Length: 252
Ligand code: MF3
Ligand code: CO
Image (tube, rainbow, N blue to C red; front, side, top):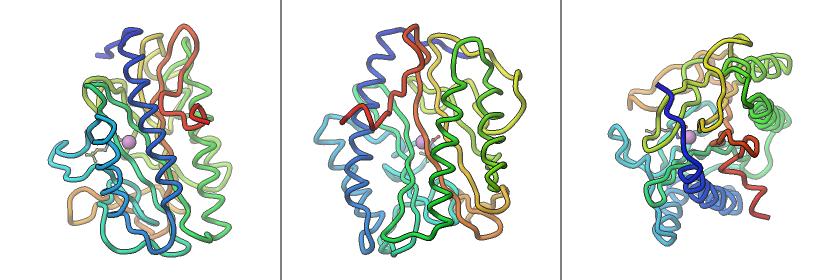
């Protein structure tokens, strides 16, 4: 069942989203060779505490950290670790912020130091794919229109879209209905309505879309060892249009 959110609930999630957007802006300044994803984990815990918020991922289904930090061929759910990031790496930082019981979810990929042209294209295509999906997230469209727009664009650029991990409704808990795949057919899936709040979070691979699971039971990586990137926003469909609750540009 898709639970629609009230104006008040969306306002509160927007506050959580603004805080999360500001965390990503700080992370962008931190990322450079020599810094570790563990440094980012420590920073996020401290920053959220200072702002009266908590990291919702910590303790979720036994996950132990505030952030997921997925490096190079890791698709998602990488653990933060003390190994330094290296020049040329790409890293996706994903987190869910809980501010007074309201959640927001956003992932962002970052290049470390000087990255290759291929990595630049991967980041660019993945971010553009997110916004192509967001354009389709309007009342009257169907959820399948989002995935179709993303998949068509990404494959035309020569990359592939991960199937195993998808966007999701979000509310009092991290994962709610509807499921939001980043691939599929137009005109399929639930109709998009005012009051829906969900994420769009395409994971895009340079090579094959298939993934394999690490022995830690969490981290998914590409089967061919090629890189993967991800951008994610939390969106609210309202009378005033579709709001990007985790928009970083709002903060300027
Ligand atoms: N932020 C993730 C998402 O986009 C959820 C991570 S699940 C966790 O769906 F367990 F790793 F926290
Ligand atoms: Co996320």
